[in-house]
Length: 187
Image (cartoon, rainbow, N blue to C red; front, top):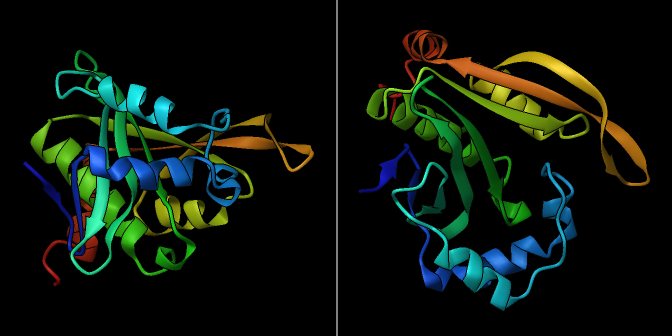
């Protein structure tokens, strides 16, 4: 089963995707926009990581592709909590030329539709590094997520500390957004 947006398709990660994923995992421009700590990775590490992927896990990771461009990034729903019906979401578009074209928004919208309408989750959360204005615009500005708090000086990047911005959205907020903007009605 694939998860479809208007322009993107989210699908299982396949072995042939690993060279792209390894390149992006070692690209400082990609990694400085993501939370967590990232060490350089090699193909063997990518293979080990790939071997651990499972559709029965509470950590689901997807390849993001378009018909015209092929593989453009990854998205996930991790730490899925089935009892409390929530999950953490993350996303990365690998190549800079694919950003700013609405593909990130479409990926977020597709993840929300899948999480809320197919999986029956009640809320999603993510974290954004303070200087990542593109993610703030996508999540908060275009996709209806709400800033729910900050953790001062959480991330160390570029020789200094930056705040972690915590954002989230509930199923009701998502449905109100879709009703208001007609996202899935408009081609």
